[in-house]
Image 1 (cartoon, helix red, strand yellow):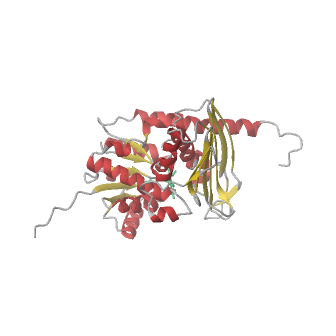
Image 2 (spheres, protein in one colour; image 1 turned 120 degrees about the vertical axis):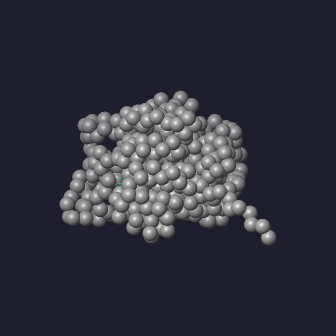
Image 3 (cartoon, helix red, strand yellow; image 1 turned 30 degrees about the vertical axis):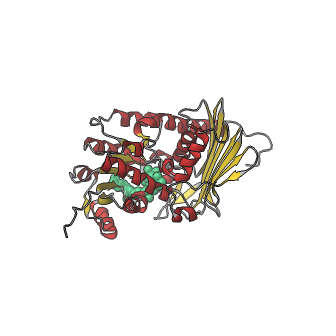
Amino acid sequence: MTRRPAARRLRVGLIGTGVGVRTYLPGFAATGRADVVAIAGSSPARSREVAAATAVPTAHGDFRALCADQDLDLICVTSPNEFHYEHFAAAAASGRPVVVEKPAAVDARDLRRFLRVPLAPGQQVFVDHQLRFNPYLRRLRACLAGGEIGRPYQLRIHQQGVGQLAAGVPWAWQFDEARGGGVRLAMGSHLVDLAGYLLGVDAWQRVTGSVDPVVAVRRDGAGGSHRVTADSAFSAMLANPDATALVSASAAAAGESLLDVDVLGTAGEAHFSLRDKLRIFGADGAVRVPVPEGVEPAEAANRVSVFKSSFTCFARALTAALLDGDAAAVADASMLADQESLLGTLDAILDSARVLSASPQPTGSTR
Ligand SMILES: NC(=O)c1ccc[n+]([C@@H]2O[C@H](COP(=O)([O-])OP(=O)(O)OC[C@H]3O[C@@H](n4cnc5c(N)ncnc54)[C@H](O)[C@@H]3O)[C@@H](O)[C@H]2O)c1
């Protein structure tokens, strides 16, 4: 019997050992055609420790060594926000395709230096807005674009997760605005991107919002206390003449994880939630519960978070694009060049929140 040559697999390098290990590593493995083969953490010892624990074959001393590794097809920048520029610039110089975690830059001004980094001809820089690859949310976008509920005039997206409510949660970069912390950037980047993706909106004419740290002070491991400067919750209203999006998130919920997307249209309504998945109501109130192609049983049963499973869908699309040359697979991906409007909206939420917190409290306020 002749043996067929082994099919080629995508070789992925990871900079950063947080979400990269939690989500990218299993996500690429689940495609069955891609492997994380190299990793670079915050120190050579950390790279070795994580590589040994995860059976990743190569531990690089730092991000520069990883970017010089000729064995990689794709470099993923999954380090904390304050390192994105330096790590992206090194990854871009390798000429390989790059994925940068969101938010790529911390604001629209910061993005400008990313956009000045030279790229090789055809070199692609993706930003990990993986919800665009979730089959339910893709079906919802098709529903809205196809006029199934008429003109979608109001979109509400609310996400909440538990984790940051307890005072004992230790101080970390996520609580420091100067280091790119805060839920407005961490989750707001996903949700504002999703609002635009679902409605086919590139820019919002009016943006207002508010932010809240929820817990004002955090202690570090050595017992020192730090004032929290970044938000654990935000709310925003994004408006255009023909559609409004209300977007909110909290990382400091007490009980339940939620991702609710509710759309009202002139001829129906559509809802996505972790519990009920996608439901579409016609103008007569008749409900349809579509199960889109690509939904796996584990996803249909998933009530906790769509981020990990959506990343696996994104990893499949990247693998198809980079191994098979299937450009259509990533046609909906968020690219570095698209971040200006997104970051402008996130900036406007913060600007509006600052104006609000500087304005006098109304009489009768209990705060
Ligand atoms: N798309 C998503 O669903 C998603 C989910 C979580 C986080 N993120 C994004 O991923 C990025 C990292 O967040 P996180 O939750 O993993 O943070 P984290 O703090 O949990 O992990 C970051 C990791 O990077 C490592 N690191 C620090 N400095 C480094 C350096 N100079 N070189 C290499 N590695 C370094 C740290 O040791 C740590 O293990 C952020 O941009 C965040 O917004 C995205």
